[in-house]
Image (cartoon, rainbow, N blue to C red):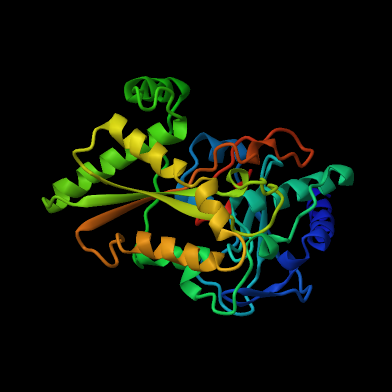
Length: 339
């Protein structure tokens, strides 16, 4: 019953988000051919509580439709869904959305609309806006490396990836905030303090392994929508994302790391965003990405790289399909997961 309802409401959602039912044409184009989404169902002979008590990253990936996020081959799906039913009747909804058209904010809008239509509350379903090309005009000469995935290429190498889940409770976050507060950043955020702590630990491990003093480039993916003037609506589809970057060393103290992160993110303001809009904006964007790329490990073996992306305050936990509260929202293989 629920599975059928999800399929019917997904079909209605794809009518609103019509490019999501298309296929990837090339690195900058989507064929809006209405061929639909990939949808698969699975069953697990365990209760949902067994998974939630200790969500292992290797199991989380099995709740998502199989896909390689880095490959955007021609004719590839834009939207892939896996609905997994547990022995207790609980369900997990695993969603893969191609970054060719959606960043995390856009994904939240898509899933929120799907959930509202599942609840038969169509009037509450967010309607997408596809005017991104008017805000940031395209160019015939737009290079591949200027896409969201393209700007990540200098920092990503093929190999064996390992995932680890580290949980910080409220008291640990409060302690970190108190420890890293300074006159420069009197009220650090949870994202800043956790990013700083993880960076500090990673840099220490790298130094112990190689015994070589290296600088480290730390980046944070930043949503440009609320930073633009006028603000770009959250329901605008596309990748309104830019990388904030800070170059630090293992000797940088924890409170200074927080300061550098705050300063880097703060630079992505109206003075930077406004020139990116209008004719010639893509050239300025490419210039910024090239500047960051010069400090990447791909072009400089004396620099390590640490990349962060935060889903805090994205609204995933507010998404309501009508069957009770979400127990956990997680990330695996860079897809979107909603148990």
